[in-house]
Length: 194
Image 1 (tube, rainbow, N blue to C red):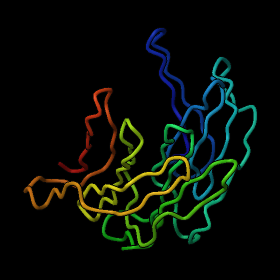
Image 2 (image 1 turned 90 degrees about the vertical axis):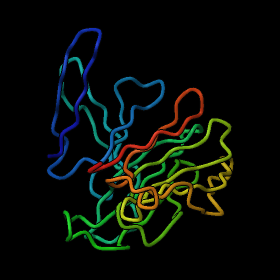
Image 3 (image 1 turned 180 degrees about the vertical axis):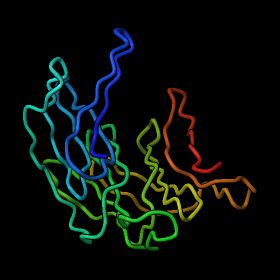
Image 4 (image 1 turned 120 degrees about the horizontal axis):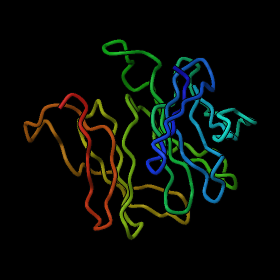
């Protein structure tokens, strides 16, 4: 709990370090700063300077706190092509105790601050965008769908939500979880419990 991990394939070195006492929801390397990472801790987006050579935290700075319920936590986060962070919350519970519609979906950048994008989210998960930056995909796992939006990356806006894929309608076991696109523009969906 509260650890971040790094594995370097070239050296086969694996290291871990504890950054706080709760669930760490995501870790994203900062462009052009190999020892800095943006980390999701509770409702905070935290910048961590991690001296990986000596495996110690040099500094921590809270960049933003999501204006969310104190009983919630961050669950997933990813940056778009411009560097804007997209992240969502859910109730800090497990299994059947997860509260339906308790979370939200946000975007964050230094210039724009925190912007509420969607409300009534249950389990905020997969985030991806098309190679041409015109479509945005998002998963609220309890809906069992991958939703698609029109995406205006310059303004940081998603609009016109529609269902791209419904796993229940296709009799696929599990719930959509993580999302990514490959170099050919294909959308890949990880399934939890599938």
